[in-house]
Image (cartoon, rainbow, N blue to C red; front, side, top):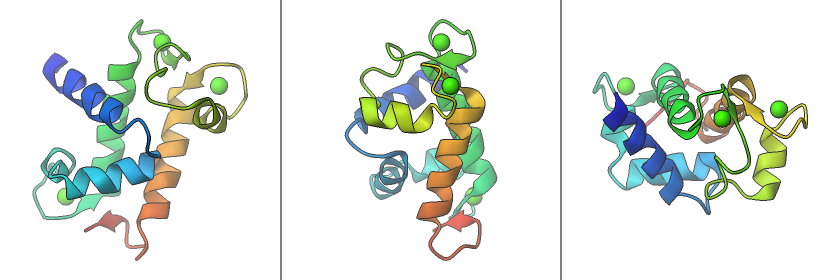
Length: 118
Ligand SMILES: [Ca+2]
Ligand SMILES: [Ca+2]
Ligand SMILES: [Ca+2]
């Protein structure tokens, strides 16, 4: 579990200049699809993406207070991305805010609208 969390954090961190959706698409192209496609059916379903991103949130939440502070995401999100994700503008990103954002990105990346990314 720890290894997975570290791996996810590293994966997210290396995509720091991209949006979540771009990072996810790039990840698939770069061979990370196996990490997301946990049932190995060749597509990334909404549930698989959701599970992956929930693990990413856990990995990023270094002090385990259930929120992402600016220092915790400092190398991953730009100020603009942080503000866009912090829905209630309270200065930290809750898991709900994080998941709202990444699932919106999933929907944007799912151009065919079938709930899976090929
Ligand atoms: Ca799958
Ligand atoms: Ca935290
Ligand atoms: Ca917030």
